Each structure stands twice: as C-alpha cells, then as structure tokens.
Length: 289
Image (cartoon, rainbow, N blue to C red; front, side, top):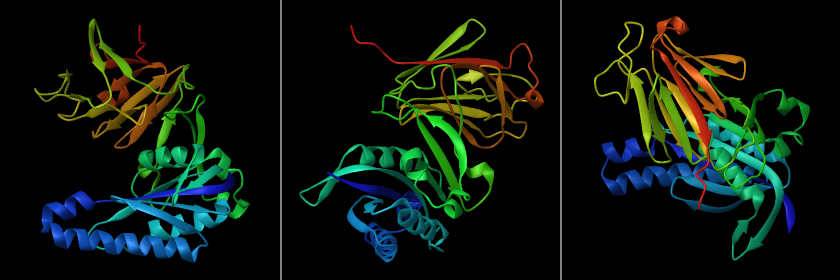
C-alpha cells in the first residue's frame, strides 16, 4: 500500500454528441478528448491508470499535482460542447494488475459523480494537503454523506464559472447518514416514497408528481432524486425555493442542493410559506429484516 492523491475526471456532454453524429465519428471525438486528458495528467506528473467509458482514473504523488491537472482540464477549450468535472481524494492505494484499489479510489469516484460540469470536488484529506494558493480557489460546501463511508466527508468545490454551478449541501440532524436508500416526502397528509433510480417532480403542470397549483409555482418548478446515496433537490423555477433544515434556511434558485436529515421545502411564492406550497422530507435507510 502507498499514499497517493487519486483523481477521477469525467466528460460531460458525450451523450449529445452520439445523438448528433454517427457512432464511429462520435467515438473518435470522445477519444480525442480522453487522449488530451491523459496528456494533461502526465504533464502534471500523474500516472494514468485507465479510461472507462467517459472517465479517466489517475493518481499523483500529492494533491497539488492533481489540482494542477484537474484545473487544466476544466479550463481546456473542449470542442463539441464537451466539459470536464472531477473528484479527488488522498489516501492509501493498492496497485494490482495494472489497476488501483482502496478507499481513496472509491471516494474520488463518488466525488466525481457529484461534481457538476467544470467543477472540481476535493475531499478533506486532499484539500488539507494543498498549498494555500490552491486552497484559496476552493469554497467549503459542507459535509456530504458518501456511499461506503461511515461518516460524512468534508468537501470543497472549485469552479471555472459562477456559484450557481457549484454543488451545495444543507446538513440535517442525520448528516452523517450514509447509503441513503429511501426518502419520505409529504405535502399535507399525502406522502410519497423516493428510492434510488426514481425522480419526483414538483410544479404546476398536471403531470407533476407533486402538483402545487399556485401562480407563483412554475410548471416544472423542481425535482428530487437520490444520487450517489444523497438526496438532490434541483430548482428550475423563476421564483426559486427555500430549503429549511434544523433552523438553517437556504434560498435555492436554478441550482442543485444536497439534503439530509429532516426539513421542508417552501416552493415558489417568492419563497413565502403558504398553506399549500410546503413539501416536507425525511431521509433514511431501508432496513432488512
């Protein structure tokens, strides 16, 4: 076992390329992007382990080198509407059969899955070892429960663009809860069960799962889903939403927020609480008998 900073970088936008182009041509375009990613990894002093689909797994001797590679990737002028998002974590890795294994690999992969286009997510073990000049480019976004880890991981975000593209998190009383498997949603006396792989929509449109027929609520106002073991709330509206957890309020407007524990979402109405625009949520884990 040896210590290393594991970096997982993933391509965003490849699906659109396959929709626009013939398969062989689309694959060639993606391979050009992956080859450039591998070049940037090597230029920063890293070692490329493998490419699988749209992502590249690599490791570096220290987080500074990993950040240098990731920063170069998210600032690269990619063709065809492509962009990169990345996750990194520092820890022990095991080299075996031209592959690497360990907690650092799993955590970096989880963070890459959560990162948005042109965003880098570093876990605490990685961020703490960065030089101050690089740390200053990150913003702390809170503790996020990641599948396979007993305690929540402190996560830091670095982006090219605006705050609206950053991952954010509102911690609840059960913020250390990992492996989220079920979410109970309620509006008044009506309840919905959200499980991984499903999505619950909120809005004024008749086909919304949670229909809120108020003028201040957009037709497709928001959606809830479970991603990488965490509850994601995404607001698409013009009026915005307010998330309230444990006395902490957060305005969410056209961006995504990670939630845990118990709380409520005030939908629309310029985030003013009315009788019918409040959705309560409670996260949990399905228990086997």
